[in-house]
Length: 248
Image (cartoon, rainbow, N blue to C red; front, side, top):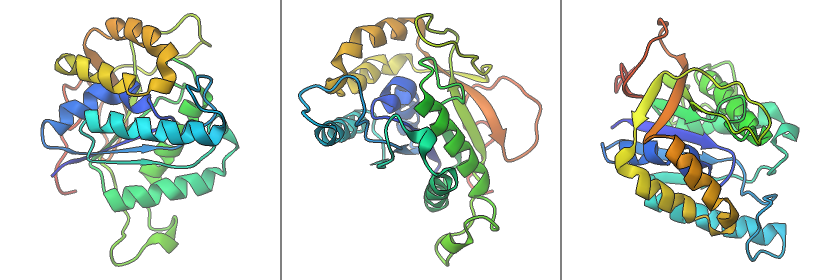
């Protein structure tokens, strides 16, 4: 069975950035995993939460509902600092993710772009950097050797993709988006993607903005091939698993 690992920064990123893709592959029998680095406790929109701790609990519960709608096989929210990922110990976070990569052993990984996605959020940029180095370092026995045991071995994920887009948000900080390698047709899943995003009820002030941007997606989620296990020329692909084999 093929495995897909998605690494994000906040609860709601899984739906907003990758919801259609997660559903697309779940329906094709791919085992899907989502790791969210923070519980979103610093969010501007706080629903009924009276404290950051309450907000984190609410957003984790919303994340669980969203992942159920998106048919995610396995999902985890980690407890890194929302709005503070740039202050985290880089080597330690990458080590944490590398161990998870070695355990999950995905064939393909997807994450945010280094620019911070169309919202330009610094946490999105850091999630991209952490995920990128975990992709590379999980395959090297010289890095985090203390993790290695009979059941945990180095793992080389075959492809790493960044989410990207064909538009930017003029009201946000400027971003320079990665070019598109794959425009995945998610039109059958638009209603479910929207439902998953709306499961994040604490973020309800964002719903109108999200719906407007959904229209601009024209039924596709777009990706940039950032790295691959075998050297290749840049080319357009139709599928994230194009050229991927079950065994490396």
